[in-house]
Length: 130
Image 1 (cartoon, rainbow, N blue to C red):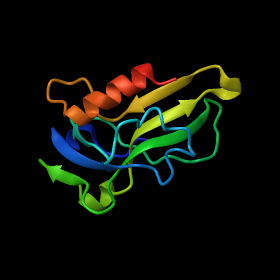
Image 2 (image 1 turned 180 degrees about the vertical axis):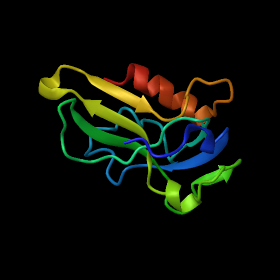
Image 3 (image 1 turned 90 degrees about the horizontal axis):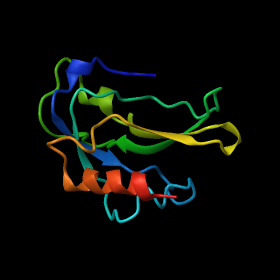
Image 4 (image 1 turned 180 degrees about the horizontal axis):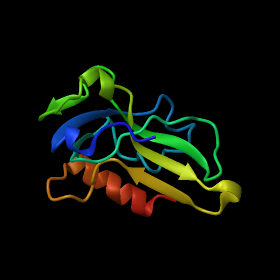
């Protein structure tokens, strides 16, 4: 479920948080090399509220959520309160039924010209993770 108007967060740096147990959720290879959750440049991308029950598309797993304390590190929010951002997923993995594949959804652009080094590592982890 998409949450916010696309123009509500124009080029804002947001602090993320890891899921409570990344290793047990099978996210160890995707989040490899991170001692702390990365800050990401969010530029008009979607943020999701993820339901944990499986759907016809697959089973969703949250990769990164927005920080529950202070999601905005730097930048503007138009018509959005920080309370609306807390806990929203900005990275989701959807495993297809019967192990036929998976989708990785990023609500930010890890390859964008204003990337942070931390989101750059995430991009390569997503490409090379088994």
